[in-house]
Amino acid sequence: MSQMKESSSIETAAGASPNRLGQRKTSLREPQDHKAESPAEPSEPMGHGEDALYVGIDLGTSRTSISASNGSRHTIFSCVGYCKDLIAEKRLGKQPLVGQEVLDNRLALDTVRPLKNGVIDTSEPRSMPAVQELLKHILSLCDPHPGKNIYAVIGAPARATVESQKAILQAVDPLVSSAMIVSEPFAVAYGLDVLAEALIVDIGAGTIDLCRMHGTMPDEADQVTLLTGGDAVDERLEQEILKRYPKAQVTRNMTRQIKEKYGFVSDPHQTCEITLTEKGRPKRVDVTDALRVACHSFVPPIVEAIYQLIGTFDPEFQARLRGNVILAGGGSRLSGLPLLVEKDLKELGGGSVIAVEEPTYAGSNGGLKLAMEMPARYWKALV
Image 1 (cartoon, helix red, strand yellow):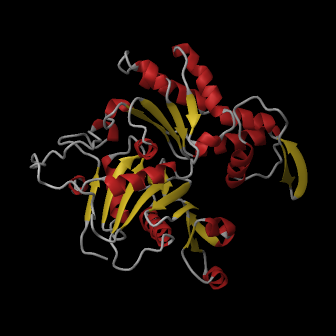
Image 2 (cartoon, rainbow, N blue to C red; image 1 turned 90 degrees about the vertical axis):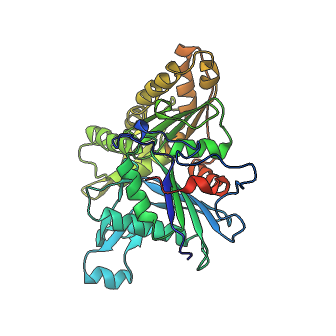
Image 3 (cartoon, rainbow, N blue to C red; image 1 turned 180 degrees about the vertical axis):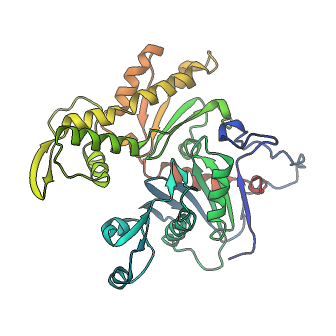
């Protein structure tokens, strides 16, 4: 791989507080130390003229997705497993394991979910090496050629701290030639070419990130991060099932699968019955009401945040904003969610809410597009 090494966050303003992403300029505007370029100075993307590999990475609490310029696209579970003992290592034949293999063999593994609330869990000592294994694995799936420069744009929560961004850059640094951090909802918007008045709601497992677009890069007032994503729904669903069936045997991984397969926020047209066990004995149970309660639990915070971003926007453009609300992320798959949010917008005068067609890759596709189009001067080391 080339010796070139650059990394940046878009963009930390001088003197900004390190506590929240929203307290510094997150901008694709001219770098502060950049002198006005002459008309003859080129503005080509990073790696212009090279046989480089560009990638967009959506580094998620539950799943990580990658889109590459060679046409590769992959998504894996954001977990890494280490063999508990020699027996496990002999049986599995390798370690660490990453993604689905971890879930399939979790009884023989010490499992690490290195991402919490959308960023690296620095309170867990194993998180940094685990996230490096995760990134190394998903990059390898794109079959990069030895010696080829890799330019990566990585999505982070809209209000991630400077420390969180630095941790991500530190993790990816040995693996790529240059890396850049952007907010996840902005990556979604950029990938969809939605740069004028629009409101992006990216519903992930660890966080729900909202970003309003208005023809320029969003700043602090344009972004909101909620710490009530899909993981919170999984936890609530487990509680609701056990409340109704105290003897049922259910794990958090099972509730995630139930939610992803049957989750809804609309009025159910039929009941949802599944098979659980009680002391090993299978039993059919109706989880329709438990699903309804759990899936509805994160809707009010989303609507409140939408109200906040619309209500504090330029009043002459509020109608445009509420008329272009776009749901992304895994949570956008919940049946009936766009219609429910749209119904709640009636209090503000009505609006239009849609879900992206490819929630798995909307963020990584946007990151890839940014990587391929961003001029080299914006990749300077700013953090």
